[in-house]
Amino acid sequence: MADLFAPDPETAPPVDEASRPLADRLRPAALDEVIGQSQLLGPQGSLRRMIATGRLGSLILWGPPGTGKTTVARLLAAETGYRFEQISAIFSGVADLKKVFERARMERTGGTQTLLFVDEIHRFNRAQQDSFLPVMENGTVILVGATTENPSFELNAALLSRAQVLRFESLNKDDLQQLLARAEALLENPLPLDEGARESLITLADGDGRAILGLVEEVYAATPAGEVLDAAALQSLVQRRAPIYDKAQDGHYNLISALHKTIRGSDPDAALYYFARMLDAGEDPMFLARRLIRMAVEDIGMADPQALPQTVAARDAYHMLGSPEGELALAQAVVYLASAPKSNAVYTAYKAAMALAKTSGSPMPPMAILNAPTKLMAAEGYNEGYIYDHDTPEGFSGQEYFPEKIGRQRFYAPVERGHEREIKKRLDYFERIRTRNREAGEG
Image (cartoon, rainbow, N blue to C red; front, side, top):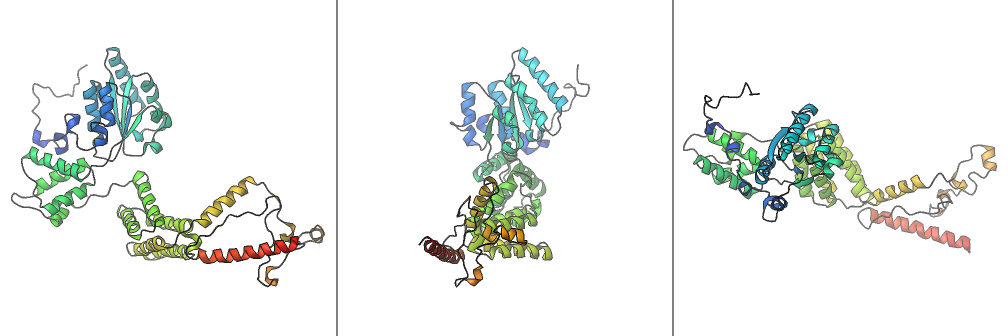
């Protein structure tokens, strides 16, 4: 049945080429024209090798926006002679998928293979993702899904096991320069930007090819003939793109990981950079405060016992001052932690003690250290033989506190850094007394 709302090709007005978005007008017509992704599309790239075999399997294209995922999917279909069909997980449900699968089955009976491109595939729920499995297994469709989120977290294991994940990278500076040159050639008009503004435009794009072409259109539309913009004028014209950062997904986890590792690695400058990036992207300062407190006890611990009070004080200062004044208190905590001596001895000791506690059952502590609040308990030997440490010359009795069934354990091993160096001296001193007392008892 004819589409009643489709324009009549005989009477429809011609499409005005100049009215199409620049990104659409510059869309590559062949894989050789794609900018970037050389790891996939270069002579030894994985996609090139697939095409050379003449057999294309299901794929998950994972990468930031504006890196060419949709374009590459279309061109793969053209290169392999497959019928291309595209849906978006945002606007499609189970009923839509059934229709798509049925069309693919009909086409296959006529000898035509369907490449089904699913944009934002991570938006489908688990049941919807499962619906792809039968048609992938029997060859009804070759699935090519695109996602900006980490497939390991967002896609079913069963779906991932049937598809190869290909990582798309953000466009680098040279890629974006090449894209600008193509735009200028198409429009036959150099960008009205000086060198500094051109560099600034590339920075604003943040590796997103579609975004930079949108900015180019803004620049052309708002700049009078003969005017050349510097970096400050460009910033004023296009305002500012918000950094690409989803607080619930990959960007969030990548940056907090970078912050934690730079603090652990004692690099205050890099730590401040990642801290500032997270704040600039809209991260909750209280999330950062909580993470800093965690870092204080995990990576510094007793090497600098002031690390924990510093981070707690920074959190309280932020509560009192709010934003932006309170952010300086958190920044101070970042620098303090990054420049502090490091030790994970308490963290390691706690994990070891917890592991033993989970597996040792419930052995009785030594009777000597159990109180005897009743005559019966005293008669049973509770508290018998307990030595009050303050009554000894060294203030340390050296008696055994572990259950006899377990025997003496060593969890905490202080390092030779910061305050833990002094703790180590003290514990070594206590161990010498313990050994002396044990040898005296044996003698």
